[in-house]
Amino acid sequence: MQDADLWNRLLGREPPWSVERIELLVREEKVDVYLVRTEGALRPCPECGKKLPAYDHKDERVWRHLDTMAFQTRVHARPPRVECPDHGVRQAGVPWAEPNSRFTKFFERFAIDVAQETDTKGAGKILKLSWDEVWGVQERAVARGLRAKPPVALRFMGVDEKAVGHGHQHATIVYNLEKGTVEWVGEDRRKETRDRFFQSLSSEQRAGIEAVGLDMWGPFIASIGEHVPEANGKLVFDPFHIVGHMNEAVNDVRKREHRQLSEEGTRPLVGTRFWWLCGRENLPERHREGFAALQAAHLKTGRAYAIMEALRDLWAQDSSRTGAAYWRGWPFRATHSRLAPAIRVARMMKDHLTGVLNYFEHRIPNAVAEGLNSKIATIQKMAHGFRNKDHFRTAGLFRCGGLQLHPVTHPIPG
Ligand SMILES: [Zn+2]
Image 1 (cartoon, rainbow, N blue to C red):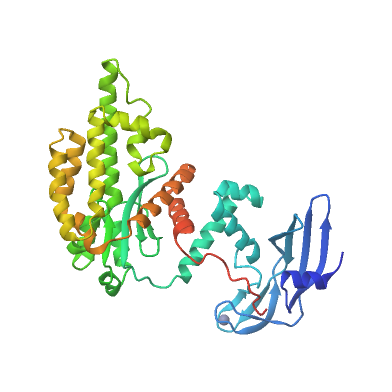
Image 2 (cartoon, helix red, strand yellow; image 1 turned 60 degrees about the vertical axis):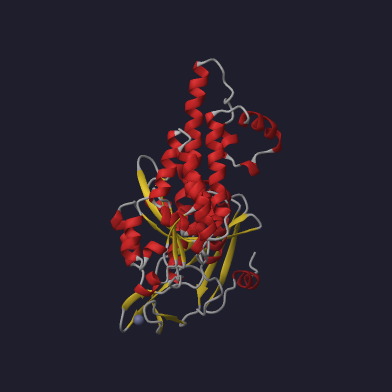
């Protein structure tokens, strides 16, 4: 099988590299393609691009390429070294692969696409690569994307902390809420980590931040105050975090009440956890009747739920004036409920009221913040076996970073 011309075309090979021979290993289901370089062809120095003759050739290297008719395909070649008058003897690159990669750029592109659609283990199965190899593809993709990324104008920024890996490790995540991407991941949640993010921005970039969405129970308030000019008017405690706290409060009330009722011999709350957490518009039809009956039963859980639903209406107000007016009624209801978890949320909101009502000035895209949060939750689940925080950072940027991950595959003049 020596149709070198066909293979040259399929591989996009141009002089000075060309296909010397192809070996088909039928039993192993493999195709080996051997490339050679024209004698005397010049190669650029990897440092300065000066065209130089080959100094010598390294040992043969092998790159995994896209499969040929389901046969695993490997490209073999001996990359040359050049001797640059300014940079000495250097390994010249090959046009089909990035330095130090064991895959061709075409294969690397494909591996990135597969890895984005599934988890690392699943991608490994499809691509017949080890976990570490698929992981290497993702790490290189993120590094490539970050190198190519232009400086950001971060108008609406979000910041959060997440638990990662085993034990009590945490990461700090910065979102670009305008673009819906993960902007940055820091390896813990210490104040210095957050400061480091802000220090990576220019003073224009910091001044350009119009609003920061965050959790009022998070550790970020002080750090933002230090680094973002006029931060007080820009901090927005985002609805989905606040509703999340209120959700937890409803759940706490339900658990306590369930225990208490069980001791008294009735169990009306059993199996209803999801009903109370999902918001009235999301409750599936088949549960609606049962839920309505439960709400009419004058339970403490029902009271907590009604307080939460009333709170959600706060963000439906159309201006800071109507928002502030609506707000005045809500805490009264919450604090007079005699439900400790609801009172706790109301107090916290009162202490952070400016930031709660700043939402009406800035309208940070809550749905985007919520969507990113759930994507990150999926990564956390996928990352159950993550060995360290670097893995979480890579996964976050690989899957949500909005980066240009692919290597450039158009033929580069050899
Ligand atoms: Zn040079």
